Image (cartoon, rainbow, N blue to C red):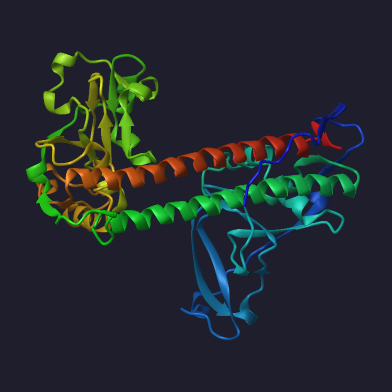
Length: 428
């Protein structure tokens, strides 16, 4: 199915008048959120009523810890659930940070951290949902929450008083809801497609990088070698973020490795965006200067998954590039590993488990230069490495294109919502 971005040909500019809430179309209504919504807070049954698994007559109690990703559920008797929400209801995450997360798709009893936003009968639920997701409203709530010195949360009195404008006719409100819902549908479709492509790539990596599945024409046995036979290891140059700027030599900070979605850094093309350290190159040890084909691992992580994070250096012009704080530099001893293959061979489950086994620390864990030498990897013949890495690289290219399209769709939706919900642009 072809996924197309919403067209802009249906939009026209509006004639606006100045009001207490800014420039709005002269035929729009001026209201407050309290005029159009009522709110129901959740309840928190006594812990003695909780059970570990669902049974007939029991419902889920939804408790949100991180409104963006993580939630856990327990089960309580339905008779004790004073508040209940369905998947189509509009829910607000009340406490934070982060605060004021607009949620849908939840089903079950909900606790005091959630509020149900119930729109007036004359207000379409889809329009109400899109209105509450406006950036301006998020900024308003965020500003209010910063006043508190304790736990931040949504003040319902302040929320009810928030001024708004909206089209006077249900027809126009429905047209806006349709346009923004279509944009959301595109985003959802792209997110599902992207998740599917990532899962396919992950499965391909586990099979191709462990010889469970061989590409046609390859039968030679693979070697198993410790990293000590393949690399020499050294450390980076310690420098804080405050010491980095826009002048000097390019610097690879371990934090940038952690947050990157890529498994390589191309020094030439990424030079303008790389942080710089203003230090004489003569004071940088040879082990910390990154050459083409070097691999840089982090030696500190706040979670187990991050202990194996790494980047392969692409530096054909041999530009000065300094490995930074909390990094381990792996410089190839031999040519047994193809550079493109290095981007993937450390990402198998078996290799990651070895990193986790050798990781030390409590709140922050990491692998030392001594222990990383003990980690073993599978080494196919160089030609087969290239073939495997090319397949995975092609998948990465497709994923990157989808990520760019998703970013564009989100930006388009954000711009549409800002324009349509304020009346700056009207639908014909």
